Image 1 (cartoon, rainbow, N blue to C red):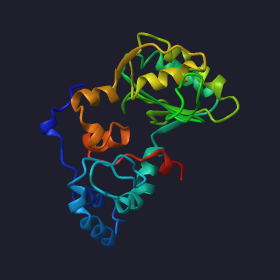
Image 2: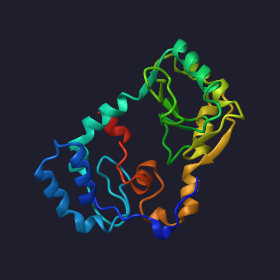
Image 3: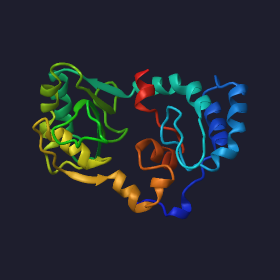
Length: 242
């Protein structure tokens, strides 16, 4: 993956983004547009939005709630149609069979969501509980009914056994996997007895190589980088839960 030079980093314009979203989602009202336009001056001071729940990043004080609240339901509806929820051992076996056979040649984006850990006080070694994980290898993959995104629900009591079913995928060194902050995911998954293999890239460290000053200009979270590279706010975990 070739990252663009700093000089090509796009400027985020919330009013422009609002107009683009308005064409897709007519439910956005004029009042919301007015509120976004009023923030234009502040928006130009900010490189990106670190948290989709309204917490700003950078030097500005942008709170794009108008955009988010107006099209959240529509966007979630589109996403849900593409997501396969895996919450049983039988479903996991079927998905893993496809990942390790017909889709093994593809590059897989993997991520985990972890609870019961204070990242400011604790390391992921022997700490944290994985509540879910996701795997995506592109829109051309079809895991049933046109679903290309895998979301593994590990909140059940049988979550540990469910994750163990993915060992043939996670531990295969020939299957390429991309992570965001790999060292964290590696340790929390290792807590469950799995040994990750097939590391291909870490998007957080790639972003640091592209721009080492983003720590002061929006950070390296997936939310912030989504704004920069896709010109579109990412749906934060807190909003998806609500």
